[in-house]
Length: 284
Image (cartoon, rainbow, N blue to C red; front, side):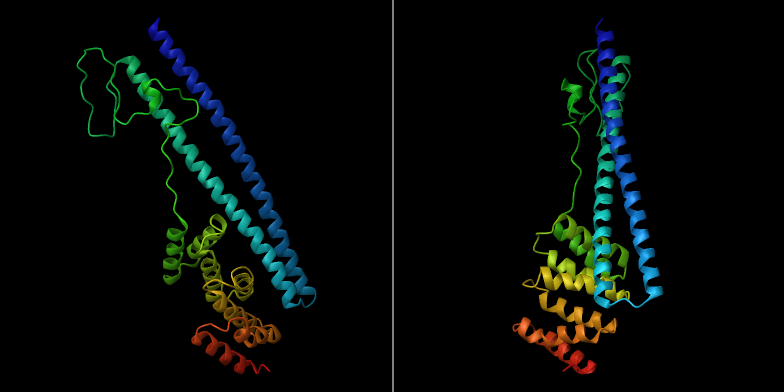
């Protein structure tokens, strides 16, 4: 009778977990489909922008605005991809833990030795005492398997760790990973003290690759959202340089000529560079 109860309880717990996991997986599939639709929308926007350029000139301000909108949409999509990746990782860990739990229960029922990744299993003093793997989940000690409270927490990195990784990737000219790191800081830690720096270096990622439209949008956000931060003056300088590369002299000169009034306490190197760029363009 006791044997039958254990089997029934184990099987019932397995069915409950399977149903919950199936529901969770279905939700993930729905999110993936929504992301696919968003990507198709972005592709349509990019195609429309290309056709607009073919039929007539587009002002740099309009272009910057549209690129900024696409940049925001892409950032949202990247954020949702990160969330799905995190959910999938947690889902996989949960499945592995449930499988381990079921394997141990079956071994206990059949009286077989229980495999453990620990230092070893001590033989019980009583001949028929059940063997329990070291570091086994609470469910083996009588706790319920309802909310998965015995699952290990997934370690996450803080803003400073991700930011430093982004700087290392940028130094190594691994622009894709650098962009992902700085973007992650902005999405996950928008109020962190390093957010303004991350926004600036995101602009540097684009500027280093000659993507001056994207760079202008990124540096514009430094000036708009993080003007009082450490990179406020740098952001205005690089915004002017990006506009200069885009052949938008008026916008570039405005940035360079306003440096002293906007950032009177800026470093001398920044003021000097802005003056040199203004002179090069013939700003008045």
